[in-house]
Length: 293
Length: 308
Image 1 (cartoon, chains in turn brown, purple):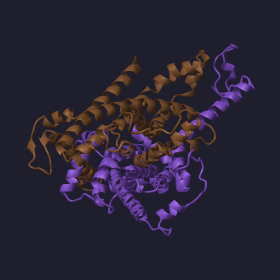
Image 2 (tube, chains in turn blue, green):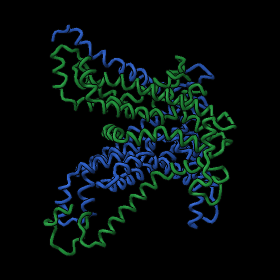
Image 3 (spheres, chains in turn orange, red):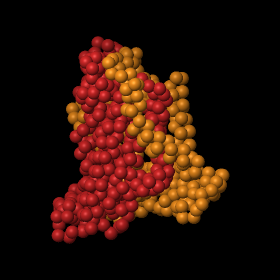
């Protein structure tokens, strides 16, 4: 090459420097700052900031609102992961074979995932409306309820389940797409071979399809886990600031930006981040290990 | 599993296998087709009903929207809510101005993040895919690792950093934060596209004396245009859907995007439901139309991004 060697050697660093600045300043530095400040008393309205060890964590776990939000988030995650992955698998199986208008159906199925969660939550809020909601209307027409009901804000677990339902509706298309890609990579010969060997449909799904798509199930479970552990938009709209259906993310928002206790906010964020990392690794380890058995 | 392989079917009359395209009896075949149609109808109903419901409410009068039992189609059909949102109707409400301005804000913020992310990611992904330099693997892995960082990890410190540099409630602040969040995904999608471009293509240009940057812009970018388009669309949709970050980073109508305004209108309880649903429908229509028209790009990008 004729161009000066120094220019060639510097070029890669010039090309990646904007990226490094962005990720360094707005991802790594904030993460480190957040982790360190979790052990400090940080209240902008009442300075100074000083080290206070584990006090933030002690105060958080002493708060019943925080404990409720942790238990609720566990429920959001369990319901969200199980239903979005199972529904995603069902939808992917139904869309696996080619048929006319399959592309159109696929595009429509993806729609809930492409739209803003908070706008969707406003729509679900209207559907759950105690006075005029369509959910009440349908259940009443089917004689499943005698009169219109208040669905949100009374019973804790019903509220959590209905809020998570609106998130499941939003994220299931993502799970379906991931699993569909895996289903389509299974060669058709495999099914024919299984058929020749006398396997019925249920058996070939159980012993052929399921093991082969296990990595995709692991990936979609982790995606569902992270999304449901981070649930905020739906809770903000459908639950409001109440403790009843509060999630970890909503509680972090309230502690930080309404109570203005930044130190406790950092501490709660740290707990959630560590929980996300540990749970993701557990899901991957479980699903991958079983695939080798 | 297809009709072209009847010879391989076991000669047992009691075979429980009844895959598609194996019409043992016409009745069985009809039952299968019906079963699949029902399954598809249920899937479409589940996917589309809430969106239809918002549209249905937005296209009727308040008294029709609040009738018992609910009316499952808009009757009477009126466009009043949309006229009001666009400020066409006589009752020029504050909602129309708020909504219009928030659409503009969302467009500027998502669009800005889209342009910035794609430009930064194209150059960096090219370096990762084609060039050799120190710490390449370490940098690449660290960038991708931030994909796993939940919003928890950065929300509060980003607010404090932006507050310290006086970028809270500015377009630039929102765009910078979005870009930092979307870059890892953009890098990953583009890196995979660039890796699939045969190196021979740009080697010819390099031998002719073109600089690597010239080869990138004139040879690789045109070939990888579908990948770049997919990246741009995904980043735009991600930006449009943001709520928590702009809720924290914006404080008034000069920068609040449409998601924040729709949530605020919902919380005020004085905005008529028909108007609220019209606002929701329009806020969803922008990404909705993009997702429907450019569906293939998105599915490619999503599956590339998901298989980390």
